Length: 407
Image (cartoon, rainbow, N blue to C red; front, side):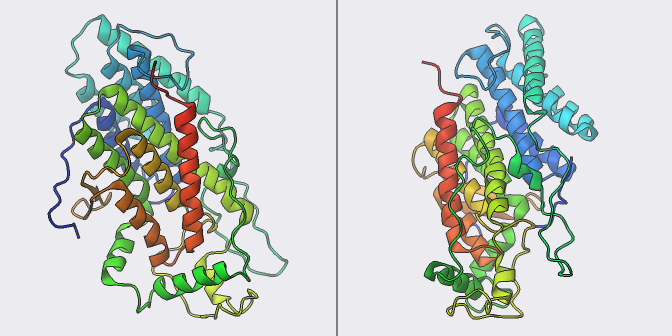
């Protein structure tokens, strides 16, 4: 599996974030994040692993409790099995298959997870059920197109230099999404024309606030940019979901469904977005602003030495991945908790747990997620707006077409 190296990526006064009440789902959510941190896995493969594990856990719980429709209905239900043991077993099998080098840590987590389950038929049935469902999910994703060889072909003119590092996980543009019909199902229209007023607006905003030498960006905005680098974007939504699930006291089946929907949605963003990105191949601000004299727009003045304050990701600009994730996460969590739940929570830096950011609502964190991509100089505003809209559409489709509560 191709992996990305994990790069090093002011609390609000008066907020009291909730303390997580753990269940098998949230425990394994944290375990998976730690396993992939140790395995140096992030971005697209990270999202795939999280979706596989949480779909397996959701199907395991629903196979016992009959609480929701299952992603895969081929495994017979086992009403007498332990739902907790089945979920933990499914998680263990999926993670061990994907990250065999982390087997010792996964097995230790599993021993803790099922240690309090009494011996007997319920436990044995739970183990057998979890193993069956994990195998079924693995088989379903075995040919999803995410682990095919990277054959991206740079478009070049003979004699003209192009970047020699391949884009990140270009094969995901043709991968099989979760539940959805195709990777291009919600592909947006093209980015703004270079000679348009919208492009000029976005160009000049990013040029002004997003450069490393910007005298417009505030210290608070700079702090946010430093926190929200690539490694923290998707894990922060897991963190928020765990805290909100604890605050609302979600039952195991509800928690399993929430995290399965959330992680299928996040995984889809890395497929649907890659389809759009590699369809349009729109340039990043660092390229656009250094070439502002050749874009055919009199309102975009070139700055030959402009450098973004954040590191530019190795894939095309349009649409914004961070914004699509935010759109998906907010829509799915609001479908469970209600619109803009005013429950304070914290996001914690994955590499340095002493660094935290506190939020009053998921909508507040989503807004910051999106803004930092402009403040960091790696996106244009329209790309954020389009991305967030794509995320909401992906979420709505998943909610309408999968894991529905039993009538």
